[in-house]
Length: 389
Ligand code: MG
Image 1 (tube, rainbow, N blue to C red):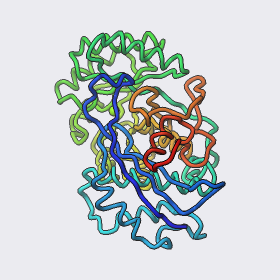
Image 2 (cartoon, rainbow, N blue to C red):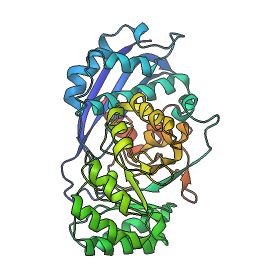
Image 3 (cartoon, helix red, strand yellow):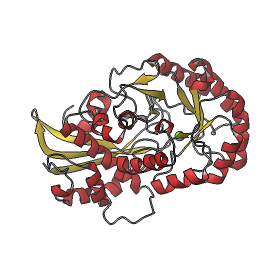
Image 4 (tube, rainbow, N blue to C red):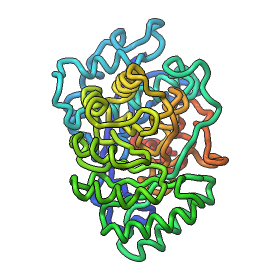
């Protein structure tokens, strides 16, 4: 087999299901890695995108990383049988000549292509991705994993009412846990948002809050003091991602769980968090986004770093909210997966008709990541490769 084409396109993605609400201009880059392998009359194509919550990386992909894959001999990308791609070997090809440090956003560009390569490899192996990567997880993947609904951004009008509607919709789908944003309004307003969602989810211990790295030291400590009596599930992205001194001080003053690592993109940064962030391995949560951390090879470096430090894998709840992260949670034996059932379309959420029972679900039983099982995602990728969905 060989790679015959790599296509990339950057598209807008919104924090809101209602596309009329301004969303801050976020984008993601879709990629398609097209091969000469044909199964049942269909060409096998690997699909990926730059996860959510940041920006697309089409420039870096097209200028630097896709050309290295295109120009490589297949022998440098393939597994030992020569019949499938080995994404770890492809990753080393993409990283050829890259220097230590300077992670910037190249990690997202590499992670975007890496997602497509894993989709491709699992499709050629004709198994769901979580099974293809199971050798990096527990002896047998769990039949289902814990999930929660992410979202809960600030609505420009009727904020608390619309937030409550969103949480109610998530609960009606079977989610028992929900995460909302705080830190963008006065604390009194945020406490009203938390109370509304806690009522709908029936327990504040099923509600997480995400400050999106908004707080400085004093505001973070004040927020932690105000949130302590709420008994929340976790308090996420408290301060600047590299302000480990503030993070450690807040962790020291807050009895509930703290979640961190979403905006750290390399094992080098993860080591700094582990050494200086004050996190408690029995209580706190690790959010690293596998796509933003150089894809699965980079993410595994981080997981193994925390393995070596004695952390259980159930402390990992990766950021993302889409099918790729669900497969990784199931295949690697992680704590649980964020799902974005409403926001960041057409990439957030699960396959059409997926059941969520008592806050648990499973990756689709389709070859690869299973984007083909989600109508809106399938249509977007079909358009990228110029096919009818
Ligand atoms: Mg976050």
